[in-house]
Image (tube, rainbow, N blue to C red; front, side, top):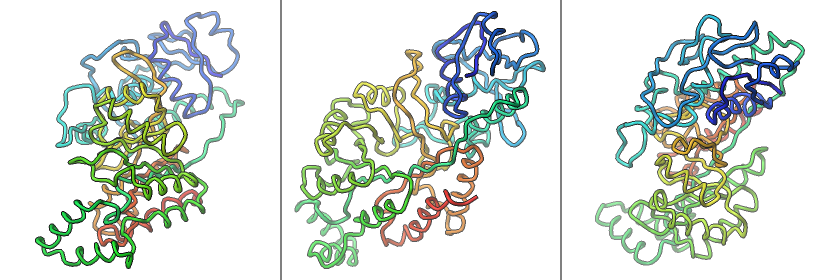
Length: 433
């Protein structure tokens, strides 16, 4: 256990320190404001205050860690070896930056509470973020900082052995609709037929009725392939099924259809299953509750994980609704148009409610690559190199890689050509040095 001396123990301080030491480095941490207790401690320890006590490991704190609510924080980003950091300390500090206040700033998504320009769906964009503007979006900077403080402790306490941690993968399969043509209902099928005909999409028209008559496989029904890959993977995939009502934004299959219910149950026999919350469930807790109950009725167990439609988050409301409904994990945190680390980490963390100044029980699993984002790269080599660079960053800190693919990504449609290979490349990265 590591003991931290500080003049004031705040919720923000405990939140940041536990992420660095406990979740990333695997070391329990406790805190004291009593100097005598700190001196008597004969194992790992450090001070975190304004002035060093003696010659201990010392990090000078930034005021953000003790504040409440939002303030106009001056954030100046500097180079630090091969990474970036902010909140400079002083020459007496064992490291040149207050990584704990910086960690809190990124994990709490402090900047997303401040005024910013949203996209057409009302989302916080990568371009608005501190990480994008200062060119560290593609690094898990918090984990890198944690390994830097680890080096300081290893030098001071050479006999202490830190726990081993290994690179892992948690593949996400997002299912907005399980089928392209099947089980859409008479009216939607007729509407699609008319649209295809007057748009001169005769190939689509032909494929539609070949599928409906059972003479061809539905292009989005790729579940057999995905489950076969699951059987050979050491990491369990997580599927997120949309079962909300039909709307302008969500055009899935009716969740009451027996075929869809059977599919979800079948997938749940091999993989974890969560809820893909519909667009209108994002801000309406009653809609979200209805969808949660619907999924629990299908699975016959409590729902543990969710992912928001369109990767949209309205902080803090979106996460508070999940907390209120006792949904324990979320997989929405990430950017649609950019690969990288929205919260600056590749280690799951807990949602901190800035309005109430408390750590909640909701675990945030931020994703790092979305299949849609890779479409901006023209060549297969560019796509693979983009994924490879992210994987290497995560491997360097023994983190967890969370890619998001959709069921239609594994279809034979030209747009998604080569994405099966990319998925396999990710799964096989666990066996590569």
